[in-house]
Length: 421
Ligand SMILES: [Zn+2]
Image (cartoon, rainbow, N blue to C red; front, top):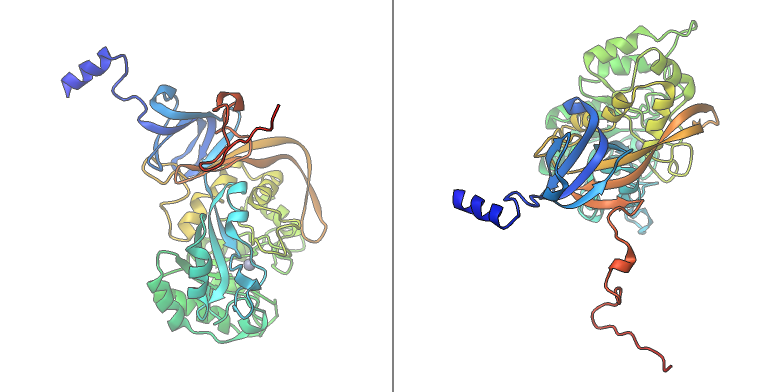
């Protein structure tokens, strides 16, 4: 070993030359799980985080991308999306209103998404083969307790089968992260309780979209009695969720539910977020546990837009930046029992998002036309998954074209046929 070291020194190249594949230099790293909020260099090797240090010699890396002035975070984890986008195949029995994961993920800093029950126990395996296994994004799924999932609201009213959901969850435990019930219209607790039964059988959390709010099953009973610690109440800021009493103070049951360990998830969507509920919650220090989009065909071009926009809304309300990042990275990863994601610990997969914090006077809308002002907005410039650049808005990975081969861009088997002079 010593002889090698001496030879390397003689050759003028240190032994450790280019031990890293990629270096993200000079960014402000916010990695809430590791308590980091500081300017750091992030080195990547073999698709994994190799080092996060105040200074890493760029000569140790094959490629260095300067991200000074930008925010470097773990790749975002969005636990409420709809991705069973084979809907347009006739008779496919696919989830309604779904979108293609890769068309929305990397361009917004998202590296992992969980589909929230677009497929049920009757069509989950079709969802897996047509979408989950083909996506570049890490796609996870909550299986709908209703057989055909979200083909329509009508089919979510019954056909519940906790045993079959649990069997599939165990068989596909690499991608199934929970059980979902949504859009239930009847005045009883059947859909919630059947979903919880499946969750118990498989040892996974339940995510509840409380559907149609009816007096027979009040929301406070959902979060203080029916859901277990670790279960998720999505659409937490929906209009009919009671947040404040007549004097504007948060209801006590919310704190009781939080103490029990129930997870409050945003699930913004096309009609499930109101400033009227979110502003007093955030102002009184009751932040959502997880910030998610409820991305689907009906929310993507509406007030929701994408995860960075949804996160920026919470920044606008006064939720601290590190708390916002945590609610979209390590916390959702923990909620879906994938603690290997959502942080930049050396050894973890190099899933990384790089944002510019735009400054200005922005207006943020809720789906009902309500507007709230904000001074900053997250904008994704770069996304890596497993250490590979998947989104490069400002072309940091490119070089001046004049430095390329004079005839670059001609593929093997093609020729440049010049016309006669
Ligand atoms: Zn949804």
